[in-house]
Image (cartoon, rainbow, N blue to C red; front, side, top):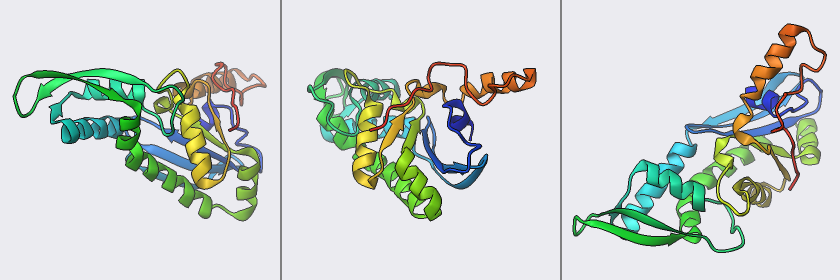
Length: 218
C-alpha cells in the first residue's frame, strides 16, 4: 500500500490497480481498490536473493569465490530479465577455489540472465497467480491500466534501464502491459511527503511530491 501511494496510484478510485514492489528482501504483489487491498501475495525473493544467486552461479560455474558486494555489483551492471541490446561485460575478481589464489575473469550479461532466470521466473509466477485470483471486474481494469513496477531492484543495468526489461519480460509472460516508476526506489518514500501534506490540510494530499511518479506503459 505504501509503495502504491508513493508512486501516485489512484488507490481511492473503484478501479483495480496492481503494483509489484521488489525490495531488498521480499517482493510484494498487490491489487488495490477503494483504498483497500483486494488481494496480495508476498515472497522472500528480492535484491539480496539475486545477489546470492549470482555468487553461487559464479562459484558453481567457474570455481571462483566472490563476495556479496561483488555479487551486487554484477547484478547492477549486468542484471536484466531480457537482452538489453548491446552485449555487456564485466571483469570480476575473486579467489580460485581450486588453486587458492586470486583470479580474474570476464563475464557477460547473458550469463547473469541465465543465473537470474529462476528467481525472476518465481516473481512472474507470483504475478500470474495474483491475476488469476483477482475479481474479474478489477482484472479488466488492470488489463487496461497495466501493472506498476516499483522498488530499488528495478534500477539495474544500463544503457537500457533494466526496469524496462523487467516490464517486457512480465508482459510477455502474463500478457498484461506494465508501467515502471521512473524513480523506483522512492515509491514507499513518497508516502512521507503525502502524509505531511495531509497533516497540513493541503488538497493535493494524494499526490507524492517527488518526480519519481512518472510512468510509461510497455
